[in-house]
Amino acid sequence: MPRLSLRAASGYFFAAILTLCMALPAVAASAPAPLRVMSFNVRVPVDTDGDRRWTVRRASMVALIKQTHPDVFGTQELVQEQAQYLASHLPDYRWFGKGRRGDDSDEHMGVFYDSRALSVVESGDFWLSETPQVPGSSSWNTDLPRMVTWALFERRSDKRRFYLLNTHFAHRDQDEAAREHSARLILSHIATLPADIPVVLTGDFNSDPDQGTYRVLTTTLGDARARVSEPQGPEKTFQDFTTQPTRRIDWILFRGLTPTRFSTLDHRPGGVLPSDHYPVLAEFAWPR
Image: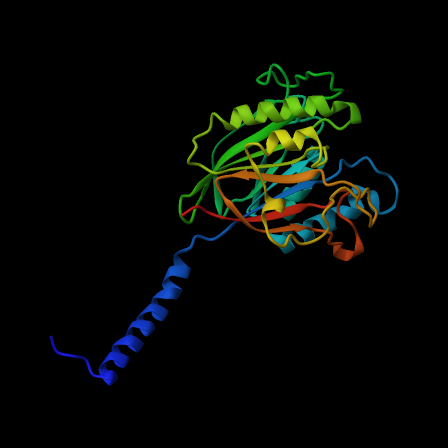
């Protein structure tokens, strides 16, 4: 077999390296665009003073959403007045959701999605109670109905699908047992979903990560904030319209995706806090 000269061998080596380098951009370009998901407790419009009033903070909320442009975001404490304002000022987004009493009154688990990027394949609701298909039902000694609004989304660009579930757990200190029951009910629902379709759960869980609710949920789901190497922004999310957040109760949990970025958004567009909770935003890579 003829030997290659040093010059010829070097030529083959550099040609191989050049071919590899030229291939790398194509590999990178083939990676699907990430999925951006936000959870946002928008605070019901009951405040009457100063910057807490909905009419004062609503423009700040719209500005923050436009700045970060999530593909989809789950809201808590949303009422019709707020939903209509957000929908009219965020024309790229559509929304859906029922009130927790089963009609259009009271708080909604409203889900907003960029309709240019996503389509809804199916959607629904269930209540966090012993009779989850009964609208407005409650159990476990909670003082208010609690619920989940969910959807199966399909991305228009590549037909990738994922489920989003959005919720707001019972809020009183004595409700931790009810929150744990709610967590188990959600996990039982997720267990019925196809294992090959990713799932994201957004919500205000009214519980801290050192409590039972978090432990129940994270037996099955990952915590996006805990899984990224350098989460951005404050750790805690509930700040009661101050600069000193006290609790991390707003979470984005997941199955079947890889979180690559996470931010707690302490932005003040126009110098106004949009809500008494900081929204949280996660970016996910899709499975190959």
